[in-house]
Image (cartoon, rainbow, N blue to C red; front, side, top):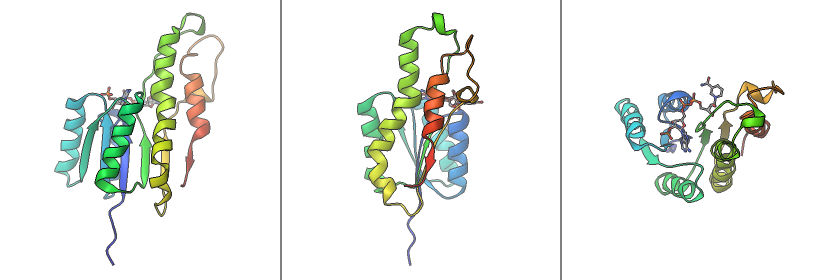
Length: 170
Ligand SMILES: NC(=O)c1ccc[n+]([C@@H]2O[C@H](COP(=O)([O-])OP(=O)(O)OC[C@H]3O[C@@H](n4cnc5c(N)ncnc54)[C@H](OP(=O)(O)O)[C@@H]3O)[C@@H](O)[C@H]2O)c1
C-alpha cells in the first residue's frame, strides 16, 4: 500500500522558532510549505532544508494580508491537496506601556499574531479535516498568563487570545 507523504505549512519559517519547527518536520519526513515576508531569507531556509532531502515549497507572504494568506493556502493545496500540520510561527513583538502604546502598532501586531491564525485555520480547515491526525500549533507568550498593569501591555492581549485558542486535532 502506498502511504502518501504527510505535509505541513509553517509560517514564520525563515528564522527563529518557525525555522526550528520546519527543520524538525523536515527531519520527520514532512513535505513542507514555508512562508515569511522576505523572499531572500525564506529561500535560504528552503535551500537549507532541501539540501537535507526535504520537499520544500517557499511562498513569500505577509500573513496579515488576506489575499496573501489565500494565495499561500492555495499554493500549498495546489501542490499537496492535503494538510497534516499547520504551524503558526509568524509573529512580531514590541514592548510598551499601555498609556503610550500607538494603536496602529497594536493593530499591526494583532493582525500578524492573531488575525492571521484565524484566516489560515478558516481557509485550511477542510484540508485539515481530511487528515488522519491533524495538528494546528500556534505560538504564544508567557505574557498571556502573567499580565502586568504597569508595563508590557502591548502583546498580552494577542498572546492570551492565541494561547486560549490552541487546540490539536481536526
Ligand atoms: N523567541 C522567543 O523566545 C519567544 C518566546 C515567546 C513567544 N515568542 C513569539 O513567537 C513568535 C516567533 O518568535 P521568533 O523568536 O521565532 O521570532 P523571529 O525570529 O523574529 O521570527 C519571526 C518569523 O516570522 C516572520 N514574520 C514576521 N512577520 C510576518 C508577517 N507579517 N507575515 C509573515 N511572516 C512574518 C519572519 O520573517 P519576515 O520578517 O521575513 O516576514 C520570521 O520568519 C513571535 O510572535 C514571538 O513574540 C517568541
